[in-house]
Image 1 (cartoon, rainbow, N blue to C red):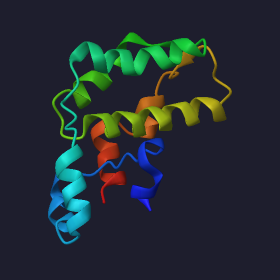
Image 2: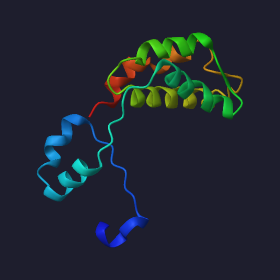
Image 3: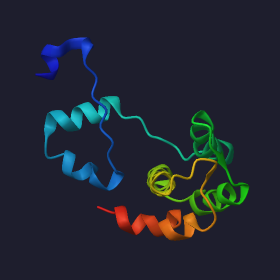
Image 4: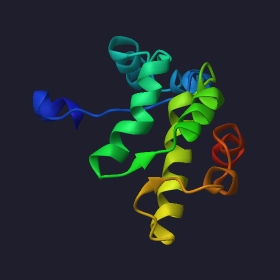
Length: 126
């Protein structure tokens, strides 16, 4: 089916490295992964900071500098830092929305209640 679609269809598959072995059971899938794999390297300090701050700014929110610093300390160099950050930011956003908080992400204590990035890792494994 993918071959019939030609160049008008792209599929992005995100896969943890520890699952590559299971893909080798499927020859054509393993071949496609081998030929098209893109390894996402860890983000720099500035890239992580932009990932936290810029989306909030786009919707008119500001981030507490202490929040940004705490989150940066939590994720910098951590394996799977982007999914950790994404999950934590989603939790913060949902908490802020429930409280109708619109001026700052988050309000004091929000990060503690939603769980810091490393604490959220346990919630999302496997």
